[in-house]
Image (cartoon, helix red, strand yellow):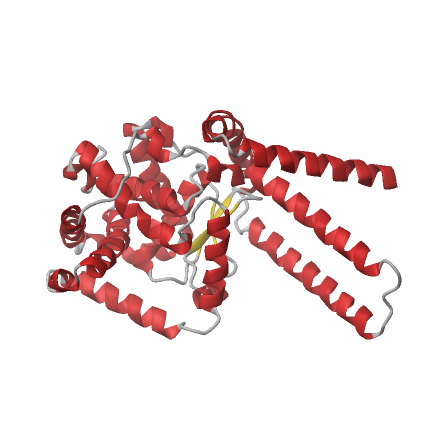
Length: 366
């Protein structure tokens, strides 16, 4: 038994080192992992767990939390009772290190190496670079115009989005529409679930997340309805191997923008308008103020609803959790942390400069 454990240690450490070295070669990661191994792994994950009506990954997380808490409680009790014998701390440390090694290896082999790929900018040959305030203003104008154009029609069947089946099928159709123009973004094997942690999630502030160990995309269904479609498309972007948040935002936008369902396109335009508007306000607050009066009545109502929602679930714990998440992003090739989400504005401007501003409009891919 001891020799088997020792062999496992050596293998895990060896694989972890290989992963670390492999990650330094993005072109190799792109070719052999992101376009080679990962599509096979992800399709298998979605085939195994996609048919289950609830989130298997959430149950897995729950079990891990319970086991970890039990271990901590037992360890504290052992220390308080002074029952920790010689070598107890060393044995405990080894167990923790062994578990961390397993998580690191599985995380990277099942999904995490996608953080080190060339990514969607290389696929679309985008020249993502710093942009001018003028370009940012043009982007904000385009997004605002599309928002107002979709405002009324996007509400016709909005309440249907509360059903996970409707949300899921609408997101799949969005990717199907995108794949007509570019087959590289075809989405096969559906595994999109309502989060089992939606209620605590609203206090933390997450709208959705991807589980790399089961390949499931989870959506916080307690969020306002108008935000759910874009969140779903974003998380499905992670399933396709776009790990970085700016990439998932961008591919999610391309999918939602290609949808025949105005509720999906509206959802994406609203989120991206807010990113663009906040950046414009940072650069020119006087100019940004003029946009508020140009918003349609329905858009203003949605923004007010979002503001009330955020205020209702505001708490002192969320900033700390987001700070930790920001550290996680920085550790995974996203040096700007949480700000990475907003970097999608640069991608949109680059895309528009390449294909024309009309390419950002609803149905622009068709």
